[in-house]
Length: 239
Image (spheres, one colour):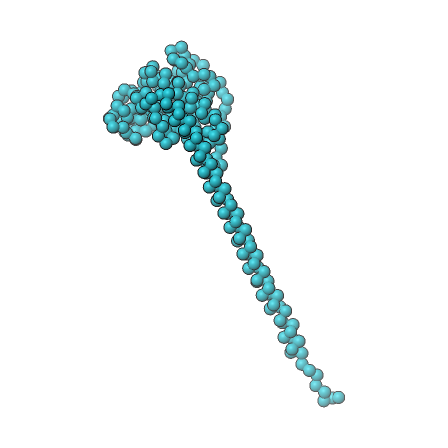
């Protein structure tokens, strides 16, 4: 019995090592599968988000086109007033004399008759959803210096707001209180010097109304319901 040799356990040691390597390989495979699944889910989510944004943008575009079609229909009542893109050009209905920001009574009547119709269109469901504001843009000719014309174009845009907000006895066919509040809440002044010039200087001395619309996800700024100023006076008349 003393010469009996016991078998070595090297085979058992090898067998004990095999499960470890097999488990590690399975773990790596499982992690790879989880990674691929996560990537697939992320790609699906991104694709759906892109499709949703594209669909919303198409809907926005279509509804704004309906809105602008309604605005274009209004211009048929005012021959000479045209719609170009999102801008309303009053043509000869609202021209200014050289180096002047004054508008005649006829131009004032046209503006007061036209703008309430635009405000009414802005309340339509297809338009109200996206309608943001109106920029009153004044224009000047090349005559004079750049800064002088820039200031003059701003004054011309401001004159339009003065005409729309004027409710005094001298104002012919003034806007209703509700429309004047809407003008104050939605209309802003902009000026352009030498931009979008017409064929001659006289036709360039004009104003346009540029309609702006919300982007998807953008909210309209809240407006305060504040009473209108009593004893309205146009500030540029002081100069």
